[in-house]
Amino acid sequence: MNIVSNTFLISYTDTVICTGATAISNVSLRDEIKLFPNPVTNQLTLTGLNSLSTISVKNLLGVNIFSDKTSNNNWHLNMDALVPGIYFITVEQKTSTVTLRVVKK
Image (tube, rainbow, N blue to C red; front, side):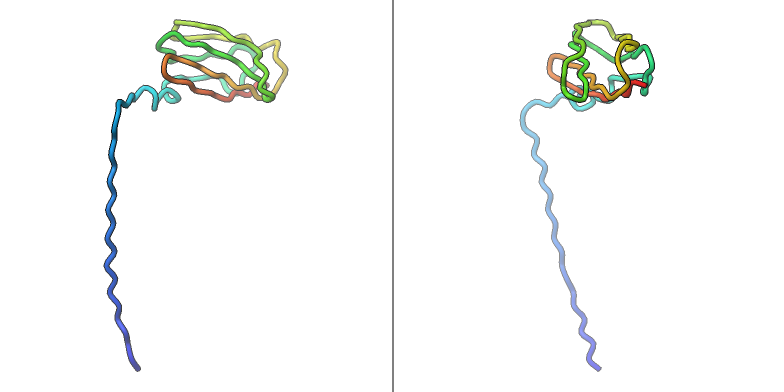
């Protein structure tokens, strides 16, 4: 009976190069903005808005239901008149855009 032993050498090199300016706020905008309650029955609240923001509400078909501009940290929307379903809330700030999903009961 012959037993063969093999030895393998695995070499791995990982190089990460960052160039240009980076902004942490762009990466974490989704974490900064809170949307509640979700699902919502009447009033929707957004918090964590830290600069002039344009907020738009679209339905599943992409139809713009509502748009607003605010410089407040908190924003409220009465959703009583909207039919139950899924809506997308898009928040645009100077250098960042985030889209959040909300369910209307």
